[in-house]
Image (cartoon, rainbow, N blue to C red; front, side, top):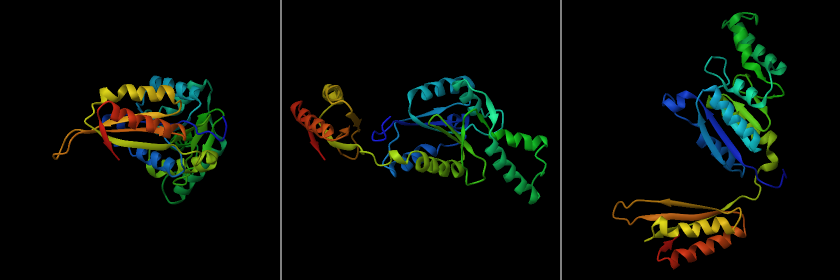
Length: 266
């Protein structure tokens, strides 16, 4: 993969609590913002349940894709946290206590013990369970957690962080800046669009299909509206991609809107 070429970036949001509505996801909009700040773009996002089989299959696909992937949630130490097990199964590797993670977790909970919050003995059942948060797939590297020292992990262009935004977001920022700085601000895609009136989507769809077929790398979009407040309905039509292809495709699109009887404004 050339450092001069943008890469696809994906996001997994893991947790039954998101799917059930017990909690509302905050990661999607934040990750989009973090990427936009660096001239990068999210290619896909999926919300996944805390189901081992589902996670294994999704991670198998994402590891095979070659994409940069961020995954939030499911890396705690309770029975519903299945992300680490799923990653190990997807990669066919063992789980093991990461030595640096063990030191960081020990340091964290010994600090709390000195404040009267728990035992300083890391051999207690409670502290052994806490140490389990440092058990990662073999070959993983840690992702620093400035909030409470308990790290996430990184393996094969996949970054795994907790579900808590206070922890996850600085960990993702660190990863973007330390591991992927070479992909910042690489040939940002251009987006060109118009508001098309008196034009059903079905009539302009052949033009959109023609664009994607004849201008490789250029993507089209069509976002219809409904009439309201005495305003006529319209379709937000556009293209995104790299110059000069995207500019050529946009000129073609505008011509097709007029040719099939529509009109447009910017």
